[in-house]
Length: 231
Image (cartoon, rainbow, N blue to C red; front, side, top):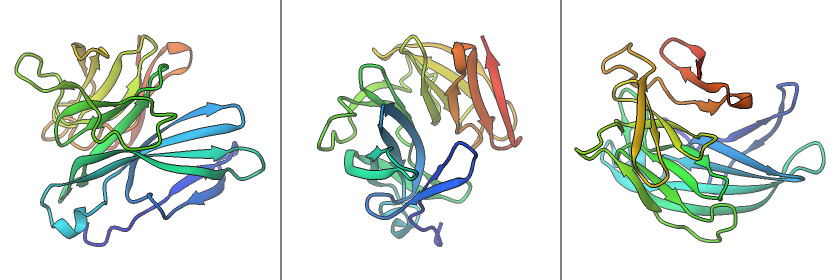
């Protein structure tokens, strides 16, 4: 972590070749990302985890951010039109095993709410009006947490929004995938990864709904695989 730098966002074309690299500004340790296309425009939403974490030397700092980049898709290379911090104040810290722990997965609902997996606080947060807002919502609204009544969340990493509007997250603490309703109730869970100590530790980042709603794709960093959880 002591050598970590701000990093960048890399845009690939349809052939898998690098078309553009975005760096600087509010890009500072991008950790996870989702996107929404609107004709000739696209919005990128990503989390940052390096705002003051290296300097803190392992202590928790509440400087994690969520950023929206608006891109113009005309031409061969996408062009940044605007840059807005829409979320801030998320806890983050360096970690000897995971490099950094901070806000991770993000997913956009059809209503324009951006859900964020707040890994350190073990919660799911919601940023309203994510596509059009012009200022930060802080850490947003609390959707669900790992309280004793519903203990499904256990260090959520990857996040995606299911076709029915529910929120899917994958845990670093037990290898489970958890389905949470937008109102906050955790309605289902299932084991995805039983390898490691604890199971799923640092493995379950990428998460996406498969085409035609046939299941969920998830990456397993430990096994170095891309997997499909079928319906």
